[in-house]
Each structure stands twice: as C-alpha cells, then as structure tokens.
Image 1 (tube, rainbow, N blue to C red):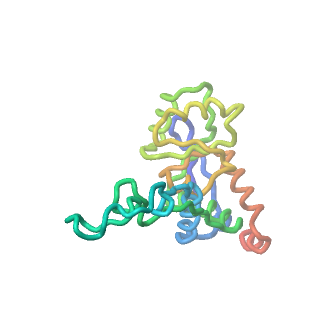
Image 2: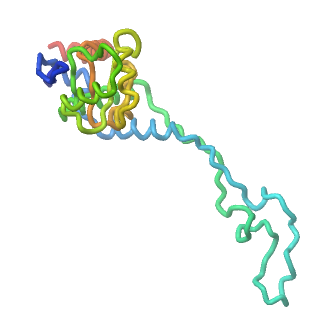
Length: 223
C-alpha cells in the first residue's frame, strides 16, 4: 500500500489515502508508458507535409541550352532539383503517423502513470479543491503552499458547478494545465511533474479502476 497525504488549503495534513498498487497495475512499466506516450504524440501529428518533385512542377521540359560549347555546366530542364523553383529531390508526401493500441493497454498505461506519480510522491491531494471565487493569484498561492514549484496537472471531477471557480483560476497560470479526473491519460500525466487532485475525485478514480480490474486480479487484491 502507498499512503498519500491529504492537505487542506492551509497546507496542513488532515489525513491520508491508501492506494493499492494492484489497482494501478502492480508495478511501474516503463516500456508500456513509453509506448502510450509515443502513440499519443504520433497521433497528434498532422502528416500533411507535401512538396513537388520535378515531374509535378509546372514548366517546360525543354533543355535549357545545348550540352556543349557554352562554357557553362551541363543542365537539362529548368524543373530539375538543382534549379531555383525546380522540384524537390526527396519529395515529401502526406502520411498518416497514427499508431494503434488496445484499449486495455491504454487503460493500464493511464493507471500506471498515476502509480508512477504516487511512487515518486508527486501526487498532491486536497480535501476540497474548490475555490469560493475565481482567483489566479489565490490559486498560485495555493500551489506555493503545497510546495508545487514545477509544472502541474490539475484534475477536477468537473469544470462546472462548485469547481467552476477553480477551473477559471487555472487558465492564466503558466505550466499549469486543467483536465477532468475521468479524462486523465498518460501523455498529460507524464508531461507534468505534479498531479493535483481533489480527494473525493481521486478516491472515485481508484474505485472505478478497481471495478474495471479482471475478476482474478480483484480476488487476488482482496485476499
């Protein structure tokens, strides 16, 4: 079991949350995390780069001048890659960089990324991550109180209702990104040093992860 301390807005520890490693994959799998990270990065590539080769450039195919007798270098058509405005020798063509990954592997990678943060002590839990009113400076002071001095991913159960002021407070802070707890994924988790979560939302996330475990693993974790 991993114990993650829970703090209030004053930075005082008010409790702990126990995390069962088996619920989050049992152990950190670097190869799986890298595969999921590279997949997300590759799927964001547009792959629309395109250039023209010498056969696609508009222009005449006539030889510029005769082969010999001019004292100049030998040249063919003006569309050759050596000429200004000519075609590219190594043409770029549109390409899909998308990579596939089974849904069970994606889910495991997401939870494994959370486990990696828990092992490194980079998960910050608040008893209630809901501000009374939007305040960028107030949220910045909260990060300083929790000793969050690097990039941070803020995971909220919702961006409306009671958590709307918190969501609006995050927008103008550099190196701080907002997401919903049910939309956590490996790429964003690994791109930020700290993970700041509401205690209730994090416990709900762990409960949902435990329910999606295979029956055999649930029985082994309960025994």
